[in-house]
Length: 89
Image (cartoon, rainbow, N blue to C red; front, side):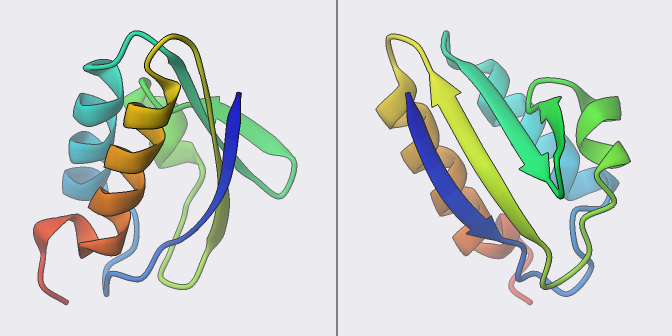
């Protein structure tokens, strides 16, 4: 199991388009992937769950990946967040 802190840094936070990119990426891995914010844990493969986190800019999340490709999943999702979901801001 891999646990990794994430900070949402893009201007608009984890809005619908960014959440969709995250869910699509997480769903491409066999591992279970979840996100936790202030004690609330949701599947990173669920658009409704990710949106319910209400993660605005500056929000701290914990990424948890567990399974055969957990390291690849955690690395890819971390890169997506660090790249501001490809939004450039």
